[in-house]
Image 1 (spheres, rainbow, N blue to C red):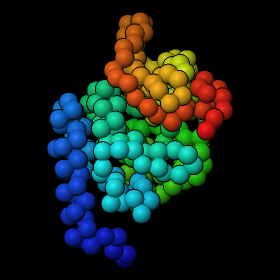
Image 2 (tube, rainbow, N blue to C red):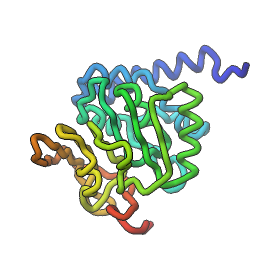
Image 3 (tube, rainbow, N blue to C red):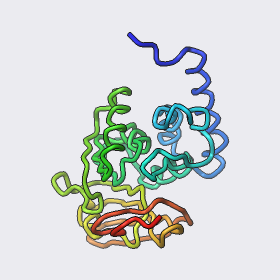
Image 4 (cartoon, rainbow, N blue to C red):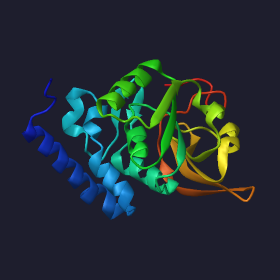
Length: 226
């Protein structure tokens, strides 16, 4: 059996996560106790390269390869809190990336369906999920802007990249009632939007200014520009 980390390093990461929750999340209004507990439990450092482990709990995004990033902890917590998960939901995630957001969702809902367009990221995330024994999720490689109609409707949908508009297929696959969280706007500058479907009516509100990588696909940006 391989020993992945010494007791000392494991304790150091646990302390770093607790400090992250205490200093980065709680002061900014993350107050859902389940979200805070998940952020305190999921080992963010395992989702980045070994060389970045020491920075894993910092208040900033980090590169994960393929021109993509892992969002800062606060943004992961904020988007998760906006979903209002109780533990019984089926959630669609568009943009698996390194898998950190996926793991946080898996700790808070019944089932996660996650779609990633880049094979290398999908494969790497799958290895970490297996390592952490996270099994209440199903992933595939595809255009996430099309959703995953085979498993719809979803109680909640989260999009971890920014598109010019809210993709119509995602709204269609959202349950009633249901909530969708997505960054929308121009490349390099967007607003975090919460879309709700209730009693057949779809409404949206803006939460705050954000900056995400581009959402590529038939219902997003068609191609990457730098």
